[in-house]
Length: 437
Image (cartoon, rainbow, N blue to C red; front, side, top):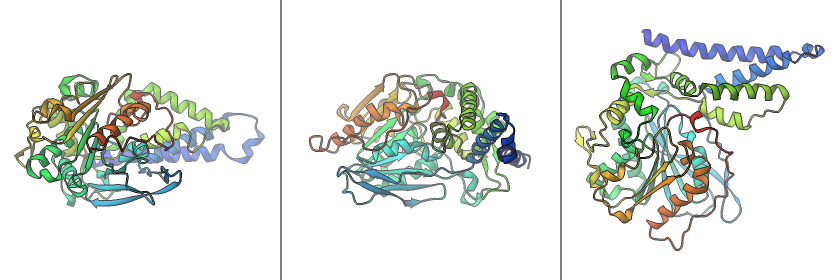
């Protein structure tokens, strides 16, 4: 009961700050204050505007916001988000580009479950849509999932990826980003041994902790320092009465957000101070760079307790994937059974979340995969966010990934990756200001 109280207490603090922001905005906007030539009232209103928006976004699931994409014919094609497969803990979504011929590149983006929604990969989706048929794993917020739906740990996550690949068929090209990289690798290993006809054609693994011990980071150091008992006591709480998942044990999104922000508190504080000044001067907008970033960054979701704890214990502490000792329902998953799935490893030189070497360790497990089906790329100067959604991804890595997909589809001479006609996102902020996905 105490843990449920602490969950509701955090939600109470969030709602209170949202209310204080709305109140300050309204107070500072009274017409009568225009009689006093004092900028204090504009500052009060601006502080309230930024505060209210920030705390409101913490419980809002962002929209995909991809209305259309420009095709090779130069016309705008409407993008429709379709639910292909549905589950209690996640869905398989397709971004169908209407009125456009099939591109021949079917891509499954395996999104992280690490505190943020799959919309964290929106810019990745936008960059791929002009050239690919894009699907994505859309994980649900644990606070909205009834206890009756049961548990969800890393084995269940892997099973969902298996189901999605089975649904999409063998012409799929899997692209996994960060946290799900080792589990996506395990899913393909399970298919290789049990349902080889459902294996994807290729997989691209981007900045994931296949072997966390290959290169130390703050994330791996934290996993090594704390015990499972400490984690259980410090971060696990029960969902409060307000949500559909009342009583479910979770790692709360608000608690995760506080740790994300504390990692780079000075940068975030400066960003909000500058935004308050912009709002007071009338220079801010609903879709300016600050709001576009923080509307996504502040939108956090709860993870099931069993998923978070099993990730720390089995991926980081006992290194089951790195040792090829992962099991599903007691059945060993032998990653070395993968013989035909072309694999590309992408890492960032300055990645401080999944440092170079952690993802590359996947190739050591693929002992039966021919050398000509293996490819690696280390992006110079790139941090964690840049290798899947930033400038490095758009300008350098994306074309390489499309080349890799085409080469393993047997049509390198006829289907070269087209230049993206999608609008380029603004230059990404500091890598450390992003969440460790």
